[in-house]
Length: 120
Image (tube, rainbow, N blue to C red; front, side):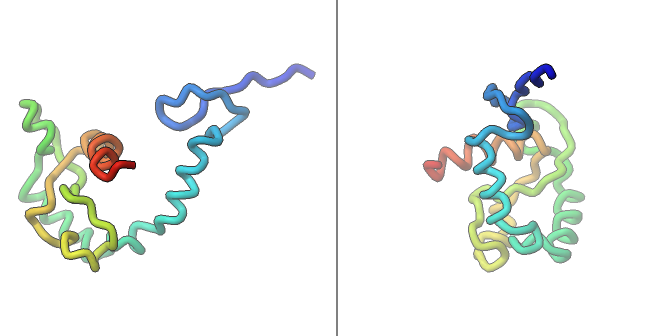
């Protein structure tokens, strides 16, 4: 019976080869995600969803794209300074700590800028 070829790890831009799923390096990220808890456990509950709708209604464009001269709808409220303890963190509800972003810009900021700031 022929062997099945190895596939690329399902983690974005990873070139490691695996039988299926993620490589050992990126499987750890999944365990970290499980330890984080659900969105509701982190404070993103019904009250946040109502706030999010109103905030995006008043701030409909992605700030990072707008700074580049692009008009892209915002879909996410980003905490400029990341919060650690959900709604118990004083920065969670501070409007000056929020900015409207599109999904792509939020992913970039979280992955590159926030990680760099915390030395991870």
